[in-house]
Length: 430
Image (cartoon, rainbow, N blue to C red; front, side, top):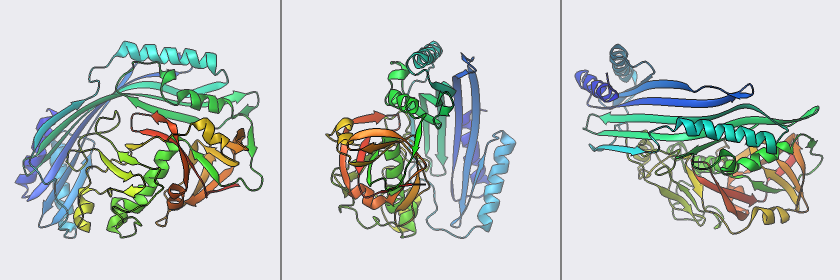
């Protein structure tokens, strides 16, 4: 049975079971991977996966079920389970399927895999890495072609199909120099093509060189200053945390989000402009998980909050407008006009934060965690590799005390991000 037929079967089963509203999502994924292992490039492996999500709604009560087995019997059982769950649920007038009946197919990305190019680029990368970064040891390195087909249907007549493909390049590695070694580091980059060597993709060389220079780690003694340059990969994490904590769906529904009523007001430094751009990015999707067509949108423009980031359900429940998208991972931040080199020169005492290990901030925005794969800065120079170093602060302070934003950006397929230098954080030994 084809994917489209399975999606139709699910909505037919919902109707037969007496649903007044409901939806079905069928997803088929295909991953073809070439990987480096035990000193050689292994043959390609292919992994297929198929899943279904079905939601039954009647009398304002709903049940939602996800399954990874999708033969006809499995789908019938999923609808029955969703129906049973709805009987036990509390009425919720805001729970409903996407409010449209559009029929559309969207296709993007390299649907046809270039297997020869995948081998060529990985072999080229491993040869360059051995030559240019001899201290590095790679735990896993791969080039993958990812292809996905998603079909959304509801009982209002909507049927949206998205076919999406991309390449991903990922590596995990550490540096070893005699008895000394660095901590593990990694990256994962998405792209619509393999036109340029993997080694020349954004931020790859900086990451590899950084790990090569981290075999001697220096514990921090005393005060580490309050000046932090946040690397692009962590700019995403910090900004994601701030948006979800202050302006995201849960924060608005629970009325804990500090920015929930500040649309049109200044919430960060005017140096910051941030957008959510899933449409057109290698790692983004046009079809939202609620069955709407995403549109790119600005969240913060020159420090002013332009939009909350709300799902359809959160918007209904809070009496607000649904966001054009809530694809929080697809963040793009506009570059500044300061070079990374000059940013480092401006730091009296602080840290270049390449990776941060910490949980989501509290509702007030407070956070704390450990700096990894990072470097101390003193008197405008990088002085050594950091270890056992804590970084703590408040998300709102962090983005209001921005000193500069780099002119350099890193594009990883999910968005384009610069380095951000900020003050007011506490850097201390463990």
